[in-house]
Image (cartoon, rainbow, N blue to C red; front, top):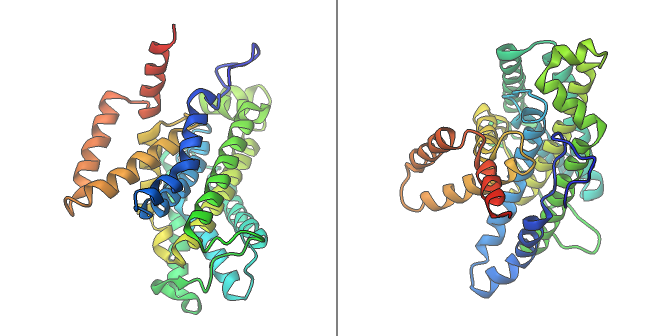
Length: 324
């Protein structure tokens, strides 16, 4: 979609020029995978989309709000556990479970954000990490829900007229959720709220001087990101049929941050590209060596040195060169 005459540098286009062909390819992927006898790639694509959603939620506060949260995986884990616990109670309706996961994660983000956002810089990073580790160890200590052994889901969530136990159906549901979520993020970023959030990232002191309620804007963004991460957790629990405290560990937060940096901090599709490249490399390199993290680390180093704004910025430069 082309920018309107009133669009500013704070607006973020959905890039219909290439995103529509990419979406058509994603829609056709199950047919292609089944045609070549590689149905495994349908499940892999679902996993990539779920992590793309989780990374996009982190990019929303990190890239557009300037909040370096090192405990974002906690919201994913809380969403996943919410689905698992409610399923254990006999609730299986996705229209109840998934919104419930978002609400619980959002409330958890509200609690953490209300305290963490009173600090800045390295203190903010450390306090978000501390909260995430607290919920991680709390989950380990609750033996009724599996403790450190984790908790299995008796069944996937139920959607009327859709059997998401089928991998192809589940993939299309995940794709629809991911596309709708990215569209919603773009609408929020292009609205007044998103503009103010990005202005706060650029100069928080000036925005305070202008009379904006900086704390409230940042807290609202933090809660929105927590809700989106909770939705990703709900999908992750359904795909794996299992949740464990490892979902909330600090290393998972680091993984999400790595995806955002790889894809492009502050780019609408930065989290998506980061998740795609990271997980495809993980899948490919792990077939050749158990030390696949070494190759991945080397790539991340190259991206940081050669493309400090991530892979999305490289694609944008190439796109501008092609434009007459």
